[in-house]
Image (cartoon, rainbow, N blue to C red; front, side, top):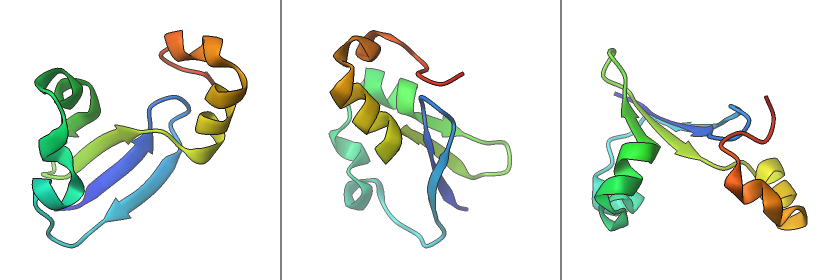
Length: 75
């Protein structure tokens, strides 16, 4: 089982963890139920995909705060 981090705005692969980690180590236990529904997706192959934000999109959001209302910055 691997955990894949992918930018929710542009789809860029941010990174992959292949070692066994628990939800507390990753900080997933701090997410609300709603945040978990939007950020964590379980793949059919047993891997987990976590939607995050890449550095480029974070920089764009800081420069253009109006982008916060959009689901995708780059389409």
